[in-house]
Image (cartoon, rainbow, N blue to C red; front, side, top):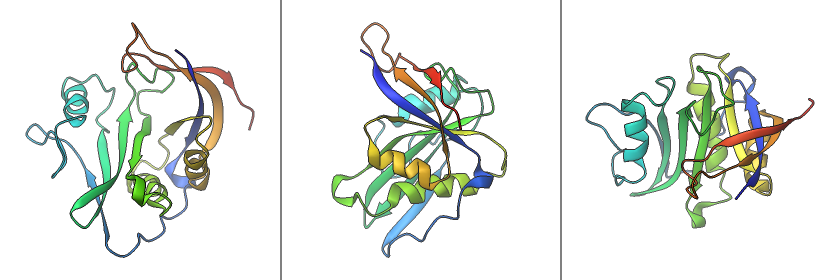
Length: 179
């Protein structure tokens, strides 16, 4: 199975300032440690997998983290920041990718994903580091989020699976885009 995807790339220096969150929402940029496997109030799945990839140094740099947004006592948004690993062979060693973006269904349309992406970019001290954002070409809402962050469409490609397992597949660039 091959899914068609768009590749966006940009740097923190070109991103606008994050807009304010709606009243009652609270952000958290969580980082793992030897004893912190998942963010507070979150279960082990899928964080245990990412934590293992981080601890076993499968990720090519130490940039793994999770940006979360809470509303009341519920996490309503998650954006995962991952370094290069086998799923993202097009990235360089120092690059980061923002993906596995999830927003609770009844919280969509409130700008939470845009706030998260812009906050991740704003928090990076390495203003020149490339960030990637890979999205299904039919996901117009996610495409608008990347464009609002001033990320540029750089390529078209596919998401592949290996041995029928999507996790072991990769995102592969098939065509570079001009401009």
